[in-house]
Every structure is written in structure tokens, then in C-alpha cells.
Length: 118
Image 1 (cartoon, rainbow, N blue to C red):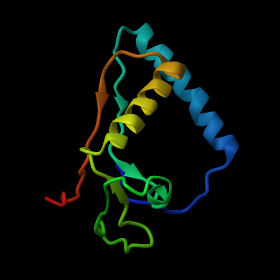
Image 2: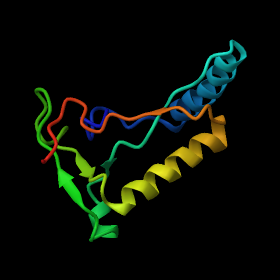
Image 3: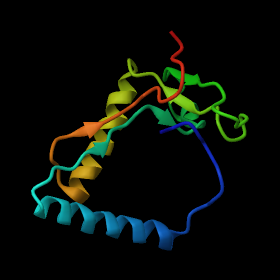
């Protein structure tokens, strides 16, 4: 969703690996039933430090979300019109395809419960 930049954690490598291999099994089984998978596409939420690596990137600091202060919310958002948005989005999709194959269906909600800057 992109509404939180931190909460709890960090997740252990064991947990991450378990969830990854579980996802592979689930996707395989879903397709065996003849269903199509829908993977999340890049929604523009990026680490705060991205601006140090890409100083010309169009990055916006979003406002607080729900009852969380900026320690947890106020995520950093890469504007969709920035060319870097497409680069990151394509790289993400390519990783999904590498590990899970594709059914060519992706979903993204850029401003989930958030107000765009315009």
C-alpha cells in the first residue's frame, strides 16, 4: 500500500525466504486450477535516500496517514511522470517474471488513501 515506511521489524531472512518459497508454491497451484495471478506493480513508493542517488528525480514527501506520525508514515513518493518511475517499475515486473512467470496482469494503486500533490 505504501502508507507506512516502517513499523515493527525487521523481518528475519528466514521469514522472507519462507514467504518467497511459499509464494512460488501458491502461484504454481493457482495456475494448476486454471486461475490467473495478479501481481502488484510499482506504485511509486521509494526509500527516502533515493534522492541522494538520483538527485534530479521528482520525489514528493507524502503527508501523514491514519493515526501514524511521520516516524511511521509520510512516505517518499516518486512521481509517475519521472522516467525513473518506469525504470523501477519495469525492473520490478522483470523480477516477478523471473521468479513466478507471468499472466500479464498487474495492479497498482498509487494514491491508496492518500491525496496526490496536484
